[in-house]
Image (cartoon, rainbow, N blue to C red; front, side, top):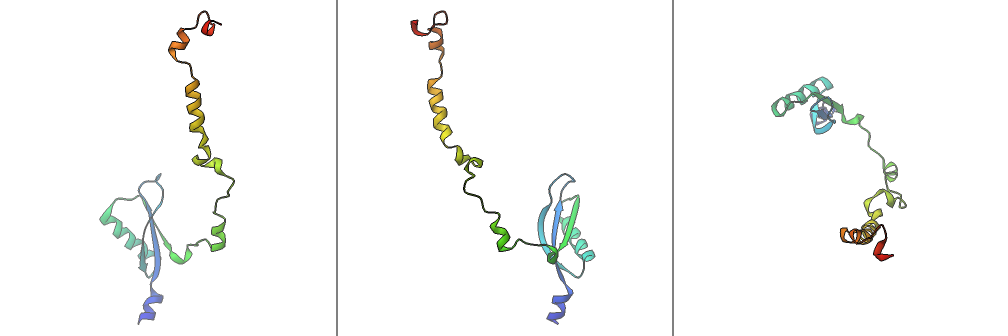
Length: 119
């Protein structure tokens, strides 16, 4: 009887979104004999929890994962430090030096006729 139950039910993944403009979010998996019953079970579950605009039910076997080889393409290339904030670490030091060289009010007021320090 176990073997019949394994082939009778299929695994479904349930997604939803709260409004038409909100992103689709994954929620849970469920077992159902077909897509129609799966959508009814998902709808019943959400009716008890929260209001949603749309529910998506997808057979797990129809979802494709990346292979190990494909995941390797997601690794970062080492020469892209300028894309991360750590690539700009020198800016704090540069900004501090710039602030120290900035003119203050006293210095500006000490100028006479556009000449700095009596020059």
